[in-house]
Amino acid sequence: MNKLQNNKAWLFVLPVFALVAFNAIIPLMTVVNYSVQETFGNNEFFWAGVMWFEEILNSERFHASLGRQAIFTASILAIEMPLGVAIALTMPRKGPWVSVCLVLMALPLLIPWNVVGAMWNIFALPDIGFLGYTLNSLGIDFNFTRQPEDAWFTLILMDVWHWTSLVVLLAYAGLSSIPDAYYQAAKIDGAGSWAIFRYIQLPKLRRVLTIAFLLRFMDSFMIYTEPFVLTGGGPGNSTTLLSIDLVKIALGQFDLGPAAAMSLIYFLIILLLSWVFYTVMTRNEEQ
Amino acid sequence: MNANKAAGRVVPTLYIIFLLLPIYWLVNMSFKTTNEILGSFTLYPQEFTLDNYITIFTDPTWYMGYVNSIAYVTLNTAISVAVALPAAYAFSRYRFIGDKHLFFWLLTNRMAPPAVFALPFFQLYSAVGLFDTHIAVALAHTLFNIPLAVWILEGFMSGVPRELDETAYVDGHGFWSFFLKIFVPTIAAGIGVAAFFCFMFSWVELLLAKTLTAVDAKPIAATMTKTASSSGYELGLLAAAGTLTIIPGAFVIYFVRNYIAKGFALGRV
Image 1 (cartoon, rainbow over the protein chains, first blue to last red):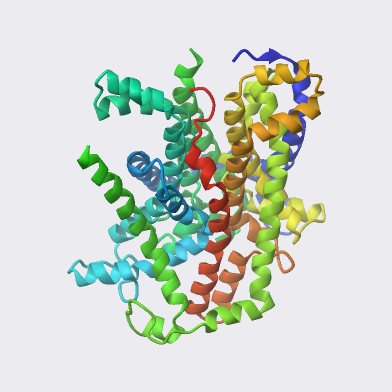
Image 2: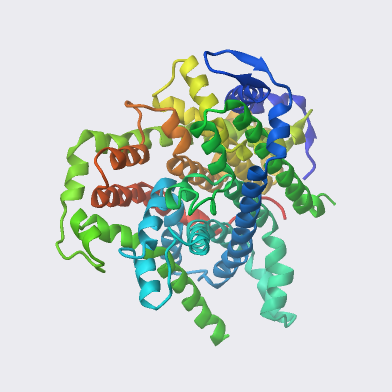
C-alpha cells in the first residue's frame, strides 16, 4: 500500500509515545544511573565508570547463566514453533470442535505465571505429583529437585505446555485466513499436501509466524517467575537462567551497581538479537 | 486423505490431553484436604471437600485479590487499546518523520526484562503518589501491552484497503466520524484479538504487579505467594485459588474465539 507522507500523523502517535516514554525512559535512566556508580549505603554514590560492565562481561558466572539462557531459549523455540504449526495444521477448520479446541488450548496462556510454576512443581513431584509418580512407577528414576537433567526436562516440558498454544493460535488464525480458492487451484494443479504447505500455507503464515517467533524469543529470554517457582534455579545453579541470576544479585546481595550493569547488558543482548531476527524475517517483504 | 483425517483427530486430542493433565491435577488438589495431598498419591479426592473454596469466598483478603486483579487488568486493556488505535492507524496509513524508528523503539519496550524494571518502577510510582493503586499497575503494564496492541492492530489495519477511507471522505465524513463509525467497526476482529492479548499478558504478569502494590490493590497472584509463606503450605487452598485464576481468562477466550477461528494473517503477506 502506498502510504501518504504526512507529519501530522505524529499527533496520533503522541499518546502512545507519552505513555511508553513515561514507563520506559525514566526507569531506564535510573538503571543507567545506578550502573555507573558505586554505593556504600547511606544514599552516598560514587562515580564508577564502566567498572561494573567490565566486571560483568568478564565474570564466569554471567557467561554460565547466559549459556543456560541460550540453551533454554533455543530448545523451546526449536520445539514450540514446529509443534505449534503442526498442531494448527491438523486442527479442524469448521464445526463445533473448533470452539472447543480453541478455548481448551488457550487455557495455559491465561494462568498467572507463578501459578504455572507452582502447579508444575506439584505435578512433577516424585511422591505426590502425577508426572513424577508415574515416571517413577515406570521404573525411571525421576526427581527434579535433585537431578539437574530432570530439572531441565521439567522446565522445558513446562514451557512447551505453557506457550505452544500461542504459536498454535496465531498459526491457526493465519491458516484460516487463506481463501478456499487457493486450495481449489492447488487441487487442479494436482499439488500434494507438502506442496500446498510449502507454497501456499507457509508463505501466508509469514507475518503471524514472525510475530510468534519474536514474542516467544523475547518472553523466553526474559522468563523469571515460572522457573523461579518451579526449581528456584536449582538443583545447585543448574537451572539459574539470566533473570533469576539478575534478581539474586540485585536483591540477595544489595549490589545495585553490578545488577544495573547486568540489566543493561541483558537488555542490549535481547535488543540486538530481536533486531537481527526482525530484519531477516521482514527483509523479503520490503522487495 | 483418510490418514490425514485420522491425524486431524488424534493430534489435537493428544495435545489437549497433555494440556489438561496438569490442570486436572490442580483442580483435583483443590478438592482435597492438605493432609490428603501430602499424605498419599490419589488420582481423585478421597475425602471430597469444598472448604478451600469456602475460605476463599468468605475471606476478603482472598476474594479482594480477584477484584483487584480484574480491576487493573480491565483498566490496562482499555487504556492500551484506546491509545494504540490511532497510533496503529498512523503507522498503517502514513509515512512520517521517524516512523520506522519509532515502531521499532515501541517493540523494544517488550524486550526490557521486568526483573530489570521492578525497582525503578517502584521508585517512579511512589514518587508520583500512585503506589498501591490499580491505575499504577494498569499504567505499568502498558509498557509491554501498548507495543503489542499497536503491532497487532497495525497488521489488521494494513489489510483494510485505503479506498475505504477515501470513499468515506467523499461521502462527507470528517476524520473522527469516519474513524469511529466506519473504521473501528471494520477492524472489530483486530480490536478483539488485541484486547485478548492485552488482557492475557496483564492477567498473568506478577513481578511488576507485586512490586507496585501493598494492600489496597494487591493482585490475587501476590496474595497466593504471601499466604504460602505465612501459614505454612496450605496446598489445598493454593490449588483452589489457582483454579479460580483460570476462570476469567477462559471467559475472555470464549468471547474472542470466533475472531481467531475466522482467521487473520496480519496485513498483506
